[in-house]
Length: 623
Image 1 (cartoon, rainbow, N blue to C red):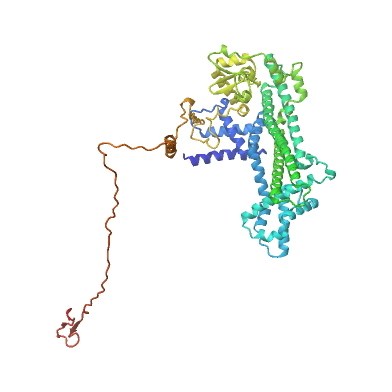
Image 2 (cartoon, rainbow, N blue to C red):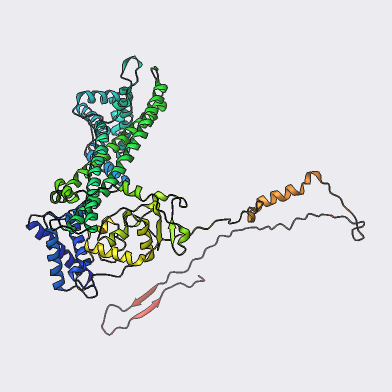
């Protein structure tokens, strides 16, 4: 089977599952279906033999399993997987978020900018319309008020006329398209800076304008709401995680009652809120970074405003070379503040979009239900568990065959990339999938270029005694609960599973991974400083200059001596000139003429039996 045909078959399988879900009233994405296919293949309970090719019956069974999983109602496991897919498709890095914000702004302004740069005006009315379009463009790009707001429109018009009067439209129209776009952006920055300065100087009596009044309105609204909303959601998720953990610990330590819900559902609910907690911490870190950037931008804006006021003061005229760069700096800071506001709104929208994925666990386990399961059990927070293990510490001297990292001996200890997303792998295996956070202060176990943390010293020692077995057991747990692959960051461990675009009938379900490693080597130029020759020179002319300097000819005199061979002899020099080459040129004109050949044929006309006579009439050359 060719690769193209096999890929087409797999796409048909994915499309079939998506269509059947849509027919049953469930809209699912190709990415979610692909993950379900991978999870079904990994689950040993489904009985897929990875050593043989995928048959038609296997494909049919795979579709039925995926449909059954996707059609589950009120399933915390399915909600967790959907949450993971949704977050991965909507969340990205801060840099890419800002690039997307700028791209959206440019696409919104592209039509207005094109109308301005492509305009061919001739009449007075057309010039007035073009000027109004420029004002509209400046309003939209600066974000300082709506183009329909009369007050903001008057401010923008007055600021634009002060730097770009309508009489200069003629020179603007004849510019090239690229130059027009560049001038539009510069005018926007200058006008925005002027409006910000006027707004800061609008108070009477020399009073200082409150910096918050200069901030974009959307920033003043989004900054407190976003961080507060994320912190509230995080507090709720953490509380639920601690309560579910206490219930599972109570059931694992004693005999569960008949009325207790299945431990599988409790673990799925715990995985759901723990995954929600991880995503909320990422959003909160971004929101805190935004707040820090806003504070820095506010400080820079305040300092730029003071410098601009000192430059202008009460002068009636100031050189544009002095104030225009200040106005542009104000505009850049204003735009950066708007970007931070847009980024905060994006983070808040992601926060709100995650809430539906926690509904199933809340529906199954209400607050009263969890209280009944807890009874008199103590609910411990992660901080309390860490305090209980504060005195536990691994002693590296006792572990000669193992490598342990401790805070006192490791730089950047808080930034170490921990396996299982900081979860204790020993507790996950020995306590039937219970998630307990690991505490690095106990000691970080370094095994095969990976770092592991544990919830107690006992767990650390047990895991270190046979790490390979525990790592394999964690992988088996993840196969039974596919949401753990994302939660514990096990993508590399399951990298041997082909993606849905590569999964195809007629080929093995698992493919051998291609191991790749990026490595680099750095060599010091001079490992030993004593081997450096300070007087080394590669330049020949520099060596000559040093030789002349060493000779010091200015303080030397020339002496001569005679020998028997040089007695009564002296050096003489004779200069001669070689013979001069001379040539003459003469010219003689001559010509010659040859006779023209002439032949006469007689008897060409007349009787039939007449003979043709050839007579040569050419004159001889000597005549």
